[in-house]
Amino acid sequence: MAEFITDPIVVTVLLTIAGMAMVLELFSPRMGLPGLVGLSALLVFFYGHFMAGLAGFGTLALFVAGIVLIFMEFFLPGAVAGTLGIAALVGSLFLAGGSTFQMGVSLLISIFFSIVFFILLIKVFHKKMALFNSMVLFDTARKEDGYVSNINRTDLLGKEGVAMTVLRPSGTALFNNERIDVVTEGAFIKADARVMVIEVEGPRVVVREIKN
Image (cartoon, rainbow, N blue to C red; front, side, top):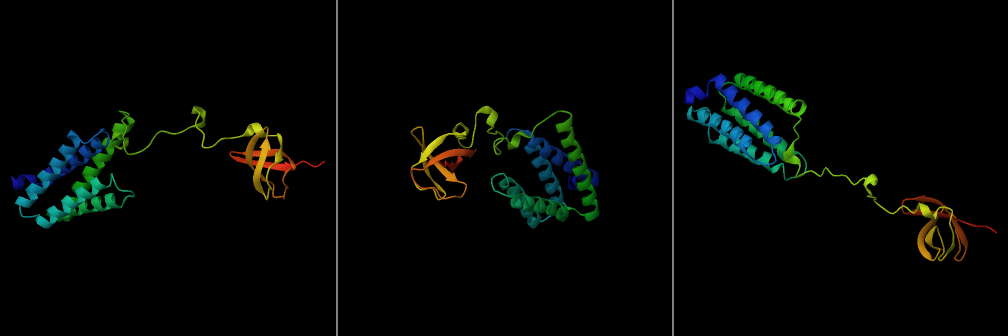
C-alpha cells in the first residue's frame, strides 16, 4: 500500500484531487464534502509516505500546523496566517516527498489543473465564491436607494438669516426660526449681523455678511 501511494503518478493524482476539491470548497456556502475529499486526499498522501518512512512526526506536525493556520485566516485580519499556512503545507509536502524534483513537478501539475478548474467554475458555470459571503459585506449604501452619509441642506442656498453668535469663522445663525451651524469664508462676523447662505457642501453651510 505504501509503495502504491508513493508512486509519482498516484502522488500527482492525490495532490490534484486535493487542489481541485479545495477550489470547489471555495464555492460552497459552508465546509462540506469537497473540503473533506481534499483533506482525505492529503491524509492518504501523508499516510503512504509515513508508512514508507519518508515522512516523520515533524513533517506531520508541520502539515497540521499549515491546515490550522489556513483555517485561522478566515477569522484573522491580514494575510499573515494564510501565507504561513500555505508555506507550511507546501513545505510539509516537500519534506514528505522522496524526490524534491518529482514533488515539484507533481505540485505544478496539481496547481495547473486547480487553476483551470477554478476558471471553468467562474467563466463557464458562473459560480460565485459563496464561502466568503458571510465574511465580506457586499451590500452598499447608495444615494439612489435613499442612503446618505449626512444631511445636505441645499435648501438653504440663498437664504438670509441672522448670526446668533459671533462667527469666527464658525458659529450659529438663525434661518426661519431654525438654528444652523455655519461658517464664514474666513471673515469675522459680529453677532446679530445679517448673513446669507452662499454655499452648501454636505453639513457645511457657508455664509457671507449682507452689507447695507
